[in-house]
Image (cartoon, rainbow over all chains, first blue to last red; front, side, top):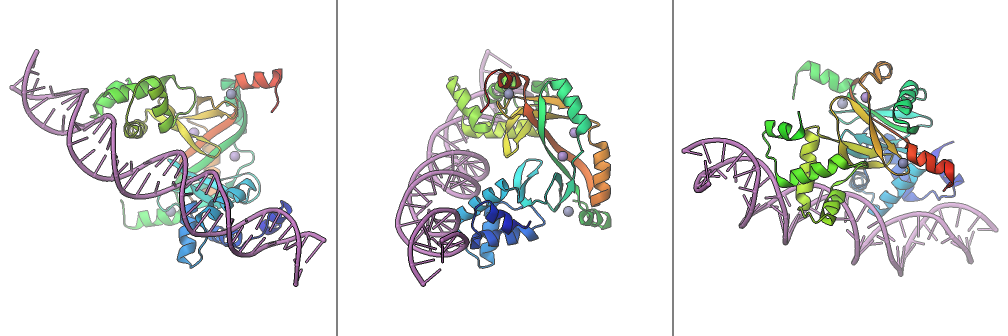
Length: 145
Length: 145
DNA sequence: CTATTATTGAAAATGTTTTTCAGTTAGCAT
DNA sequence: ATGCTAACTGAAAAACATTTTCAATAATAG
Ligand SMILES: [Mn+2]
Ligand SMILES: [Mn+2]
Ligand SMILES: [Zn+2]
Ligand SMILES: [Zn+2]
């Protein structure tokens, strides 16, 4: 089921701002935050109210169409989410992020932690950080810094 | 080595605001953000500039004395950090958080993801969410909601 | 096509974080 | 102990980010 159908089935309208924002998200390689989206669209001549960007992202997130992406020091933005259980790995150099799937990750660790802490675990936040293939290549070639 | 020594060795002064803030952090069970810390201390009759709270948390974090804690929807605040590799599990009902250690967690998963994505993994963000023992008990007793 | 209702967006309000800078204080030297 | 000096603080303002409000607009159903 595509996002437009999902939106409709959930009782929401397929408005112009929502189309614009999803179209941009779909091509995004790096996590985008509300103001960045607003700015990029404006640069493309598409002028949305900043409020609509906030509202649309909130809605898309609630519907599971996009995921929040964190950098080691906080939320950086959103990226389109595929269905099912997955996480992101983010390049520390260029921010490019890709998903990896992970349904059975953590099983043992969750067991251990539940026993140790007496908490009942029901969810987790996981992200990896590192270097994307391109940035690895660049680093090997010439530059440090 | 205690935090005061660590601070001194790193060339920083042991100022009154820093003492106040660390003392509060040390007793915190739930993640605290800058404005919450500012408010709590003010309620105790200790009036710091809000700027100092921001600066001090930034410094403590850079020195590894405190950790950032995320809720499923963003950074919620800071908690004291013990040394070494560890993560937090946060109660979704009352926010109480405890650490668990985890040096060898993820080894296999990291391998798999490196192969799949061609990224080189160098770090990770992991947090668990669930119910603390107290909130489990409360839930079993009477209430739903 | 029309009516209905969700949705948009400008503006203002609110909330958060950073910058600036004059005054203060911790730690060191005497 | 006392004074010196650079690190530090905090009030204020600026900058930035988010939420609220509400009249105007536009998407969908009929
Ligand atoms: Mn997982
Ligand atoms: Mn770990
Ligand atoms: Zn990269
Ligand atoms: Zn709890």
